[in-house]
Image 1 (cartoon, rainbow, N blue to C red):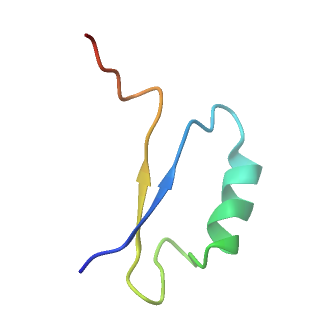
Image 2 (cartoon, rainbow, N blue to C red):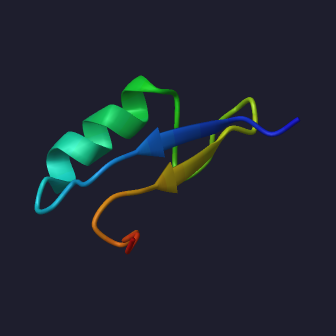
Length: 48
């Protein structure tokens, strides 16, 4: 079963995003346990 780390809007906060990715274990674009990063937020809009 795949596991995901979901990250919300990060508009203009590249350094903070890098720190967050390091904190959750992502090194050089991958996680040692195979977790995937999914970005959610401004690019996902639902119209009702």
